[in-house]
Length: 272
Length: 261
Image (cartoon, rainbow over all chains, first blue to last red; front, side, top):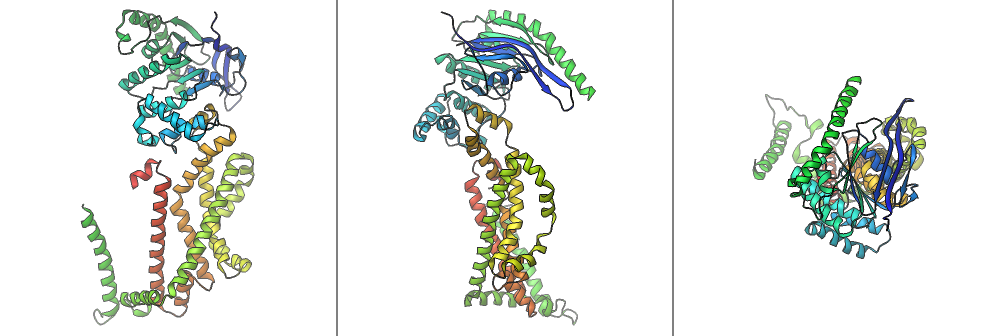
């Protein structure tokens, strides 16, 4: 049986019109397929357009050329099969944690009582059962990410798009969140596209690690399969020999791009 | 500093001021009264005037009129400000076309409109309400306009990705954001509603606190003017206290209000 492709980017190019008539090409000819149930991490240096690529998959951005298919159908408008976990705080600050989680169901027409009940269950499964009535500003950064995770997962999207979701968190909280994510993902194995700049995080979480070159006009320059056994504990998987070998191999490619990206960003700053 | 010390120091300021006022306006210093009673009255007279107003019940009617005018000005001005603010923020073309006129009207000191309103709407409460509305409207309008335009891009995208339609985005994102901006200016806009009412009364009316002060002034009753000012201050402080209570209830989700409270 061939597993269907959840997300397929075919030679997608993303370009932005700058203020004057110049055009900035963020991503050049990206070709990427995520199978159903597959966890793919995209890693690249800062400013390589990995978030841009994710926004294309979400339908928030249109590719300038090439195409994007979701479950073999061309994507027009927003990707209704996807849940999106943002890097920045995206919770509604005027809603309690419970209402924030329930909102996805409510707008889809689920009766409020039922939506709240299911939201409470989800809050409990991300470990925040006792925080239902807190507003986002009363929660820590890690707790807000948990609420955001519940907010996305309660709608049961077939595809999960994650844009450095744990980026703003401290190192320990990131690992705890990574394990939580893996636990929840293990339950029904959605297709995941996970953007990060942290190679260790990518290897620990994903089935496949995709490397992008430094921007502008970045492209995909490498694709590694991670065959570490599941279920994984990301505290322990980092001690694995295979993990180290893979890390060394990918880093040898990534390192050059990180340096290039660094040089380009400093030059750009000087040009301004 | 403990609360008690602070409170006693605060009371001390008032006591010193009042005693100084009383002494300087009644006891001659080097054979001369420094604060002539004709211009400065004295605290005892002012206080007995206030007591007289409240014991005879005259004041209630005036307080009521000023309160009604302020509330009407606040409600109508806010409603207009919210609607137009929303409209402009969602229709950039409309906002661009009207921008110079909005700036022009807002630059105009509103007091000069009072005679026109009196002419159009008579000396009853509506000319005062109209003056208050022109003050409140712009505060609420600018805040709502800003609030709708500055909704966080991420929160908006999140709403879209969660499946919200334009109408649902309005209800769950734009509206709460705009309201929070409006409430953040609640103290200012309520204050301006009172200013509109009192200034309007002062310039021509038959009732209200402004009328009371203007009448006293007309017959050189300085004690009456000061008494009116004190009642007015107390009135505004009470209203402001009410606003604080409302604000605390409505903006529980905001960190700043919590911090202040």
